[in-house]
Amino acid sequence: MQRSVDPAIYRQRNLIERFFNKLKHFRKVATQYEKTARNYLAAILIASSRLWMRQYESAS
Image (tube, rainbow, N blue to C red; front, side):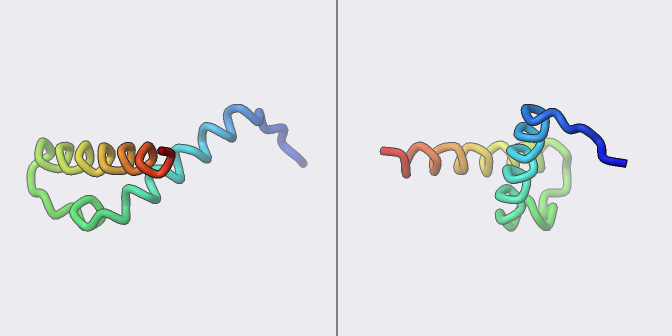
């Protein structure tokens, strides 16, 4: 039985999955090097910021 998929939701899900894939390329995030949740969240935020800046760097 074929399920109907909302294209907008699928597009958003695909975008999020690709983001997490890119995030896993950062060693500290992929190996969960940080011991505390606060430091791990900080590593994720730094990696996310670097990905965000890289996107705008290539656009200009």
